[in-house]
Amino acid sequence: MIARKNRVAAFGRPPAAGHHLASGQRLARDAAEAAEVRAHQTDPDVIALRVERVRTQVDRLCWAGIVLGLAFTMTNVQSFAAAGAAAWSLPWLAAWLLDPTVSLVLLAILRAEQVTARYQVSTGPWVRRAKWFTLAATYVMNTWESYAAGSLAGIVLHSVPPLLVFTAAEAVTDLRDKLTEAVNVAFGEATREHQPTKTRQPASQKPLRRKLFADYLNEARQAWTPAVTISPAWVRQVTDCSRGLSSRLADALAAEVEGGVKPRER
Image (tube, rainbow, N blue to C red; front, top):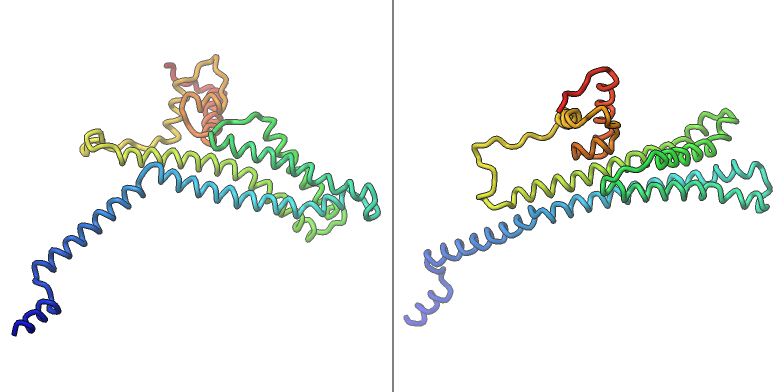
C-alpha cells in the first residue's frame, strides 16, 4: 500500500496549486524577457544603428551599379579614343587610359559627396560642374560611334549605362541626405520615448505638429533682410532644415523677393 502511494506521488500529476504556480512563473519569466527585448529594440542607439545599416546597404548597391556601369563604358570609350589604331600599338594602349581617367575623377567626387552628405555639408558649384562634366564626357565618348553610324539600337544600348550612372550619382546624394535625416529623426523620437514619465508631455496637451515646408519658409521670411543674399546655406543656417529642402526654400524665398512680395519685417 505504501509502495502504491509512493508511485502515485512519483508518477501522478502534481497538485493543481503547484501547476498554476509553475505557469505563473513561466509567464512572469516570458514577460520579463519580452520587456528586456523591447527595451533594447526601442533604444535610440539601436534604432539609429538599424537606419545606419540600411544606409550602408544603399551605398554598397549604388556603388556597385555605378562601378559596373563605368566598366561597361570602358570598351566603347577605348574604341572611340583609339580611332582605328592597330591593336597593341602605342595609341591603342594609350586609349585604354582615357576612360579610367574620367571615371576615377567621378568616383573621387562621389566618394567626397558620400561624406559631406552624411554630415549634411553643402559643396561648392564646381563640385557639381566637375561631376556633370565627367558624366557628359563619358556619355559622348560612349555613344559617338553609334550616333555617327545612325544606329538607334547602338544609341539606346550605349546610352543606358552612362545615363544610369548619371541618375544614380545624383540620386545617391539625396538618398544619403535623407537617410541622415532619418537617423536624426528616429534617434530623436526614440529618445523622447525613453524619457522618464515625469518629463513627458502631458496627455491632455496636443502633440507637436510636424514642421511643414510653409513653416520653414515663414522662418526664412522672418529672418531675411535686404542685406542678406538668399542661398541654401543661409536658409539652413536660419531654419535648421535639411540640405535637400534648403534649395527649394531658397528658390521660393528668392521668387517672393524678386516678385516684389516683401517678407514681413522682424
